[in-house]
Image 1 (cartoon, rainbow, N blue to C red):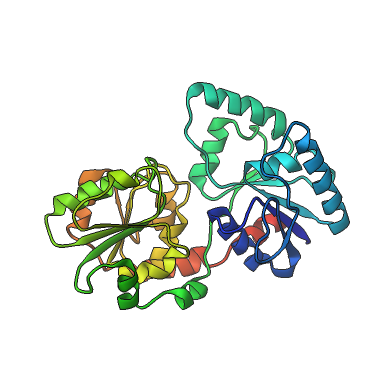
Image 2: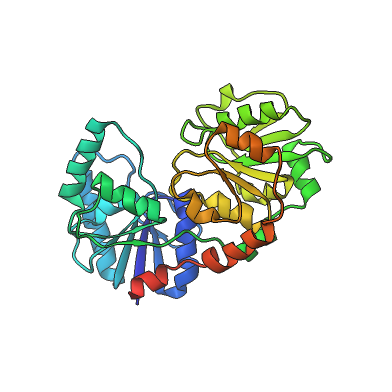
Length: 329
């Protein structure tokens, strides 16, 4: 089977999933970046902001490229790629859905109308978790009889191990003491990711531990507190995971949480909010909590006994993408 995947741009969380698809399918998959070139694959160099009529030109350019390439399967990562591919000649495309935002009732109504017009009956769908599969059906992104499969995200465990720094080097880069107990998290500092809950829970511990929140976002200025480190966005932040004694994750509705796999594969105890697709990732190899009180209790008594089981779970369940099995079916 010869497959093509459309990816908006490189160096994003979506691109990380696309690279895992490429690792799984090898030479049977061609990656096409729509707007900016990446290290691998080809780029159509389409304008990201289209004037009136530009959408039609971009679709024509994409159709011509796909016709010369030839393919048996077309994977569209995110909404823009799916919009460009909708109705093009060739095999029925697959819309790979990475997330679904909560919106107001009016915006949700508009999105359902738009989805019905552009996507219903034209695509098969892939989601990264059972939670997201159910969510897009509720939101009307797909038609009731459209096929919706679940292909969990995956990571290259060995590649991650080769990039990780030693504990002391990671701590030096982050500026945390060698002898401190360190809680850490990686992600956007936004209301949805809810880093404020982690800061409040950490303050209630009343000990000498440190909290590191790697990432940037609109809530960053509100998070300053004693022994809380805010280093901002760091490329390939997973290489710094050995700096953490415990990984904490407070997102309110993540469809998956790829960084959880990276922490589990690094044998770091995980405490995460029971929300979205997180329970499907962590299973019983970490501690799932409901709220700030739960974080305080779990952070005050970190359970290190499940790290080997977590590592084994990543190896067995998430060590290689199942996209090939999905396409074969």
